[in-house]
Length: 109
Length: 109
DNA sequence: TATCGATATGTCGCAATGCCACATATGAAA
DNA sequence: TTTCATATGTGGCATTGCGACATATCGATA
Image (cartoon, rainbow over all chains, first blue to last red; front, side, top):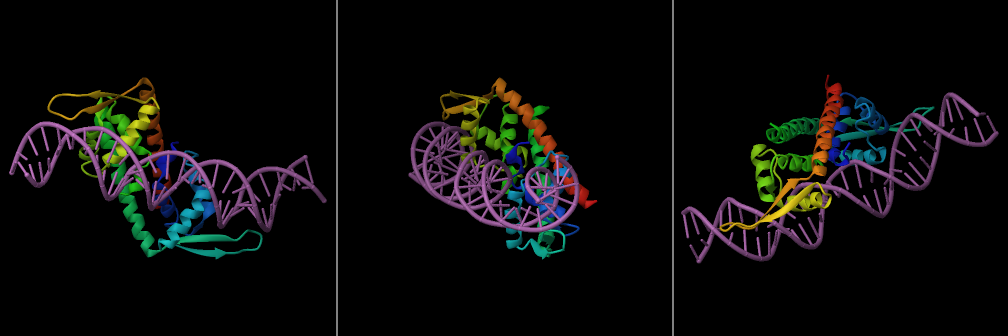
């Protein structure tokens, strides 16, 4: 998988994964890997900074959860802002894929 | 359109556009804009360096063409290497879109 | 008991790549 | 003669994912 392809789409990926419920970083990384059946991998090291950025921009809200018998986790959930951003990014992604298709297929025909 | 989405996919776009015939930089930029109906724009300033890189990597072969009544143009055509790279990038792109779909839709369901 | 792997979060420097501003040059149209 | 479309080019900047490394806990296994 071309590394560069991921640029920019990761945000949509993360926002999508916390749409229905709060998740923590490690969980998000594992979900990306398993649901894409290995096609998409994502270094956790890249993920944490992204989560901070999303929180700083007010799209996510994080909260520490400590339970006996496990390391502390930081759960992130979508804010109202984040939900709006998710909608926007969903349609931007769809438009982008469609445009790519139009250009590459026009040539292929 | 999110700027970051383009990262990495531009190469596929350019390779696709010279698949059937040689084209020059300005023409490629215009084609991207018109065929995507404005959804994808691409600064020519970003395009030229990309073309040099593709040529340096042996995927494209450039050739100056001078005709009276127009500025000199550099036409790029696919090399054999480039054709191989195009096939690879086409399947990588398809896999990527498919993986994105699986992850974002699984959540949406 | 010692060690190793999975879980969980974090920092730092690096590389890749598109953006923007700016520059140069020609031909056609206003 | 000024302006626009064509055509190529350079340099600095910002964003963002990678890789190496660090820390820490728990359960399994040797």
